[in-house]
Image (cartoon, rainbow, N blue to C red; front, side):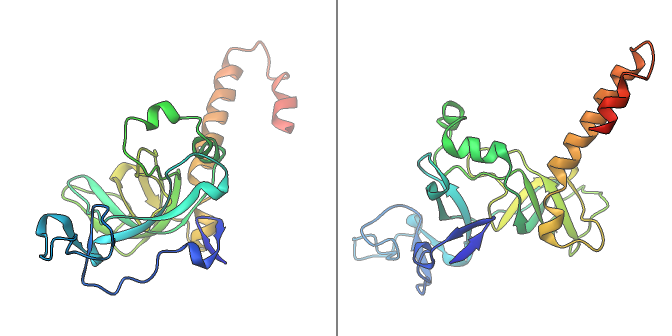
Length: 213
């Protein structure tokens, strides 16, 4: 068994090693054959294998068995963006709901696969023009991801707006740090809501039971 994004897969579900210099980016009889049945290389149909990265995505909604390893084009950071090599991604309730089809109508707007994942941690390896954050290339970083189409945290690398990325806390592993972004945001919003309610209550006494929860 192998573990990817918190899920276990039988080894045989992973694509076999690719030994050719090129592979097709469109379905053909032999997906590892750049000749595409024509007897001649097709530059418009081939991509170097080094330009492909793995992800865990969904082509058909369902349970955890619907997750499969897919290959996606390599991405690079543009202006105001950073690229993270993802080492760990958390599994949120929203991810499992989307995997089962709760966002099926929205997902129809984009071609499959759908790649889930809202929390990612890893190493920042690219910073685009104009990026000025507390994270620099080579640093451990954590990020909040808004999944759309194949843009989810369950992938080897991801490009995000620089404002979505923060330094990972010192002394934490990637697995530990990937549990913080969405949970931290939820805790902050809860505290803001409690503070708003406190300002409009006649006394702080009713807040005591909530504080104890």
